[in-house]
Length: 383
Image (cartoon, rainbow, N blue to C red):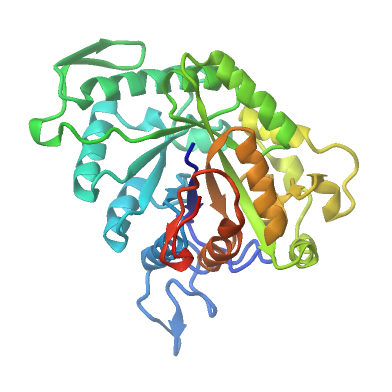
């Protein structure tokens, strides 16, 4: 089994460190002294744009051994489709994992956009299909479809997209989509269909993933909970499913250095953000359920060795990630491979420097079998 390792590219700015949640190097944040994208020189913007910073992250992670990058999608981000098209020329073999909610695109238009990108990039598009976490973010899109129906809509979307991919004519009469004699034009047919990374922890999500996913994608959870979730996915699948995990990583030369970095960030957080969380995401509710008892110290959120449930307090995103020495983090990743994980989406703050650090110091320590790590920095492919 090969293991694909992706890196996350921030599409809405990049914190300079986990110690400063409200700070940003650029993107959608105000331009202030210390900004990088753009920077300020002699009181004027230097012309460097945030998309160029994203290009730096893509190039850094490509030469550091990552097969591609996740382009997240939220109301406060650049559009991942446009970003992928912009960054493709900055890299050579790097894949772009485009996150999107099917409810906001027509599947025939999505098929045409994807086939055009596949044709232009040599087949480097990967899907991260998300069906929405509910709450204010869902209403921002004008989407009032309830939780389980969002997954039913996603399933229909993918049925239509696959139906038109090789040309048609394709007819479909569903609850959410109806098409007649649809299909891609001849010049766009025959492109490789993107791998699908499918997210969601609810029963409706797992059922839909069983039908469509190439990889069932989960946030990191305590390993015993992940193993249980994987078994539920296997039981709902007609085929042997593959698994992927999205993980924030904070790795340093020693374990003490890594935890000291967390401690410094912890000193600046407002614990009330835990109480203010909203939405009907089952994944988010599961993450909260793993942390019990009174929290008085950052190490209280270490639910199992090196698995820390407080990353969401230091930056936006999922709660759990790995904290430890390079060797410890590599060991935990190997343990996940042992559970059946076939792909990772790793992330670190700031994205640029951490791509180099994790690529150079953690990935070479992995012992997982048939790792697909090809990097000039690593002098070849590890196995």
